[in-house]
Length: 404
Image (tube, rainbow, N blue to C red; front, top):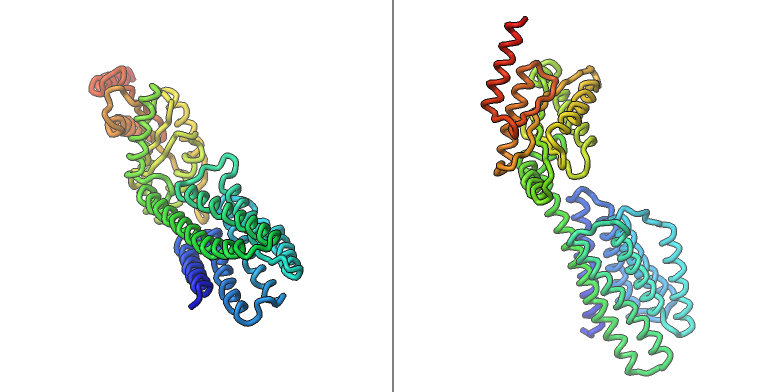
């Protein structure tokens, strides 16, 4: 087997495996459009090498063969750039890329007919596609993941390789030196093989990091409401406490509990109950600022953190949430009005973790429930110890009762 045949076989196998891998990733990871597009890009490249191997044996200089190989190569590059734009949330520009493929295929065929060879045109087009891919992934204001950074580096290397192939091709044509042709062939064979392998490994690594990210989200998210679950809330709260104390800012901890939730489930069914939970989580999450967070701690109980917010300020914010939610009508077949009670505690200097503040907020929630529900209660333990505050509260209650 000749070295050319070995290189073509390696390129075919590599692109076929990568096409299958991207296709499986598309099917099993929520069907992201870019994974399917990249699967088609590797598939077009795989088909290109099959046509290339066949054409080299049967009709190496035929115009249809050169046109098909060039079109497949440019289609693969275009699909890759389109996939990068899809991942970056940009418009894919199918028409523009299609026009580019047709135009450069015509240029490649024309240069071949003039005896200049089509490879400089295809390499130039490939270089342009990878540069577009890099610029798309590095869009202004876009935060890249670790996997994307690896892929961006791989694409930049491939773009440089394609540019070097263009330079070698032009220099070889201008000088007509046999030695340069040998250098070009080695660079073309080994460079493309290594380039595709590097791009493939980087793409697989990106898919793996996507999968790891999805698994992490699943472990810290509540599947019904989409907000943090208890584990995720505790982890996020621990980080929030560190940031709060580093910046010497206040932090409000809120425990919310839907009033009469068991009755709603018993009377209207669990579907309506689930809708209530989802609507409440959505209502709270949409009202929070950057740095705030909400999580479902279990059942109908939710935890909320308000960054850089005192207990008194949290009362005003949460009371607005309470009144807005009480005014909502929930349910399709039946109209259900649901209220919620809130307990608030501000993080104290001697709190070792969020659990201590949560316990104080839970005490305040208990008072809100005992006082008639659908209200907000602040446990200001910074000024009055919980036991003393309870005693004062009971004394005031007894005094009011005796006065009435």
